Length: 114
Length: 114
Image 1 (cartoon, rainbow over the protein chains, first blue to last red):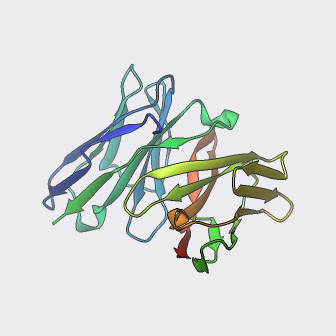
Image 2: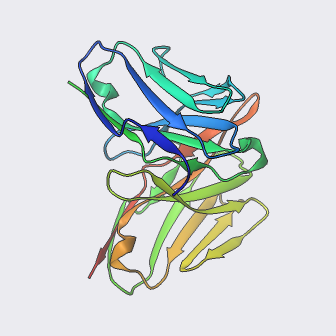
């Protein structure tokens, strides 16, 4: 158990819809990041939040957005869903990454877009 | 885009044998982490090795880091059927504000034959 919990575990959405995925970080961790993992691929970095501010973003369009709350939990929102958004979405938490801290992942949310 | 490369992409060995996986990267880093992923599940953290360390052990796992060659290896000794999984190396990606996420390769899929 990593202490990082994600919900929901599985969901199916229709193309064009919007989805919100949720993540509770490990106790005391103020840094949360999100990754997209397509089948057979390694995870790809979407963005990172530190103390409620986005402080890094990967090569994802603006329809991927996020929030971090004062308790350090986080949400990933994806608008105008496309078929290619079908993937496992992973949340990770840590203390500030720049200090070389271990990054812990949750079990992920499987999103299928039909 | 993914900048890390794991080698081999797939590895099948007999139970009890040792398994070695390699990882190469292209940038200067201050640490590297190895993760295991069972099919369809989240990432389990195995080891973090810092740039000033050349070797690190954890149970049956041995990780090396050669910063001059920009490469790392993961050795699993006395493999067990439960070691069947995909293994990923991950290292920090850096932007103007410092480390802001992890870069992953495609992983090595390890199969342990009973």
